[in-house]
Image 1 (cartoon, rainbow over the protein chains, first blue to last red):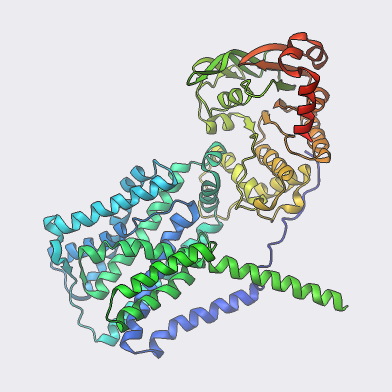
Image 2: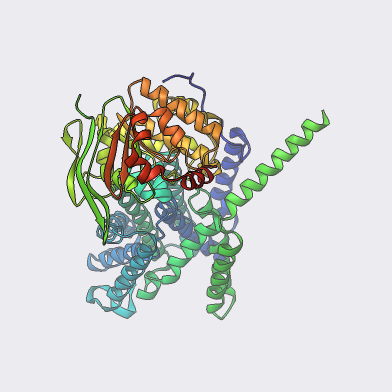
Length: 341
Length: 261
């Protein structure tokens, strides 16, 4: 083979330089860390925790669905199972107070244990059929929650009572959910740039071709599905501890499936920051509407309308669209400077 | 000399259509073999059978005297048979360089080293080799661009490049010049010659007769799923059976020229 080796072509400057990005990240992290110390309002605190749970869930959903292109509308299975398993364990083992948090690993393990057979069944088929199967499996779980004896049926389960003041509850849950969200984001970022992530994205583009080039498609998809399920299960358990109750229709909620998908779509499917941005926009808006408006269907109607608007007007999502606009503007500015010389 | 790649007595039917019937094709090591024939004569089906994308109804495929009939596309690729598609199959939403790195996956699998799955995609060696190959095929300037933004001809070059990543012993090219402008055709032809001089074997399906006759040392003609002639280009050009089956009348030639242009 001839031809000299050249350095890899530089990344396209979609965002400001590395130092500027690191600085921005530090500011955002600092602001996130002090947020609950400044805003001690009860409603704001609740919205903050809820939003962080959705950041973790949307990022987790994106690790599988965004990178692989297999859209799951059954992630509430993991969310609900995470909530239920810690609820059942706390009830049966008579665990009280803050000792409940020792049950969190159980939620992660349950997510993984459900994801393996779930994935092995659902991932036998491609794309659209996969979506339908995830919905079907979701309803199987919801029906089980309603009808099995150990789930508490329609009355659901209550979480152990925490002897913390309301402010402490908000602040402590804020930092716990923040830790989960940051871990999910870190993992998502690592995966996106890794061999594993490249294989996932190759599967998204052309699965058969990727397989013929040596990508073990089933193993790669299943691994991503399990990782995604573990984070979602943890998010479900924290959510349950926070609101202190789970019902079959709230733990296994079809709106949850649509919401996490919409967050990723709004922000930018398959990007690291997209689902974060989507969750930061949608979760607070939804919570605020639910708390302020008597009619609980209003937020759902708006959610549906937003879904339509995103798919029709912003199919690639906010982050890629804005990044492209910025890059174009910067290129134009650079061109202008060139012309002035 | 025994054949490096041999499809022996291969038959394949799709419903009532016999795509291949007792088809035997041999590719000698170090050769550039052309595979020609009218549309629907079974060329691509033969490629699919060889590369594991289709299972033959009967017959066997041998590579290096090892039977590879019915192996999966992944196994065939790992064994050393690379393939491009008539309609290029690249990964449109990955960058050109990332496309190359996908193809370098199986190299790690073969070395049996446990690799950190969260390591950044493509080590220095993989990237270096990828850039070398992109340089070789002349699209190195697009390495950071999304593959989606490449022209049709550049996509063909990218597909050729990433199949080369795995350094296969045989390359199966399905219409490498289809829809490609003349200057790129010259480049593709020159690169194939260079690779061949370095020892790579080629089996090429092609409708562009100048390309085939100028490049191939041996040409096999398929018609209705069966080999009707096989030999050096000169002999094939003069074979009345071939003229009958494929090169046909002057009108057909015009059609071909129009299709190529």
